[in-house]
Length: 378
Image (cartoon, rainbow, N blue to C red; front, side, top):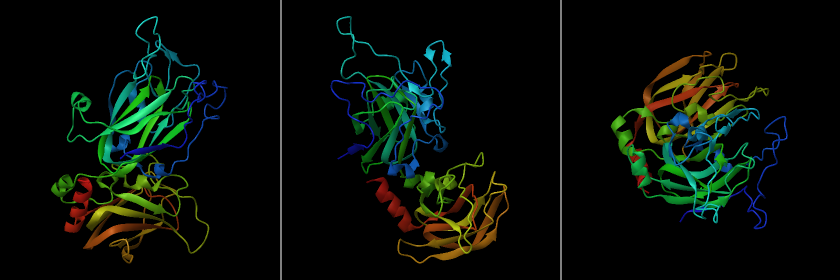
C-alpha cells in the first residue's frame, strides 16, 4: 500500500485558507524569504531530469506559464517588472483561475483540478517528490496530488489518459514560495507521473527522486553497455566530499557542458589523504573498458585517479586501475587486460579535484541479469 509523508506543508486552518501564503514580494533578493526543505531522498537521482530524457508531455491548461518550465534544472527566477499580454510572466507552470458553474456558484467544484503529465527520463521506484512553489506567493495551489503509472513503450497522450494511475501523494496542502517535500513508500516501477493542482494555481519546479530500474531485456539486447550509468541503474552511494556538486553527475549520460556539470570537491589540505566516490553498478557485471573524462575541468581536475572494485556487499576491495595521471579537459580511455567482475567500484582522486564523467563498459553476468529481472517484475 502506498503511503506518503509531507514533511514541510502545513494544514491550513479551516478559518484561514491563506495560512500557507507567503508574504508579498518585499523587494531585493526574491529568495530571501524562501522556505527551504531538507529531504533525505533528494540525495537520490531525479528521475524527471531532462538530461535523462524526461519531458512534460501534456497539461490541461498552461494559460499563464508553460508546463515545460517544471523540469528546468535552474532555480526559478523572478522579475517583478516583467509582464506579458496574459499578465505577470512566471517561471513555472501556471494555470488560469478556475470558476464555478454560474453566478450563484462562483467557486470551482471540490473535485476540480488542473494536471500535467511528466514522462520520467529513467523509469524506476519513486522515493520522494519536491513540489517547488518558488515565487508563487498567493497564486500557488491550495493542495497538490500526484499519481503514477507504468506504461511500456512510447505511449501517446491519449494512451496515457486511459492508463491505470496509482495515487502516490493524496491531495495535500502546500506552502507558497517554498519547497514542499513528499516521501513515497511504494516499491513498484513507474514510467510517468501526473501532478495535479487543486483547484488551480502555479508550481515552479517538480523533482521526482528515486532509484532507476532499467528494462533487463533491453540491456541484454545491448550486450555491452555502461554498467555504472544512471540510465542503467548505477547509483552513487557515498563520497568523501560533495562541496561543489553531487557525485551523481559523474554517471549522467552525455558529456558535461560546463565546469559544474560533474563532480568537484573542495581543496584538500591534509597530507596523506585523498577524495573518493563509491558507486554501485546496475548489477553484477564484468567491466572491460573504462572512460574517465575531465571535460571543462582545467585548473581543478583530479591530478591522479585509481579505480578499485569489489564483488558483493562483503567482498574485499582490490585495485584494477592503478594510480594514473589525468590531463585537464580531456577524455581518457583504458582497455583492461582482463575483465573485472564487480558489483561496486570506487574512484579515488589524488589528492583532490574534479571528474566530469566515469564510464565502465562491460556486460552483466548471468547472476546480475537475474537480479535485474527480479526487480523489474516486482
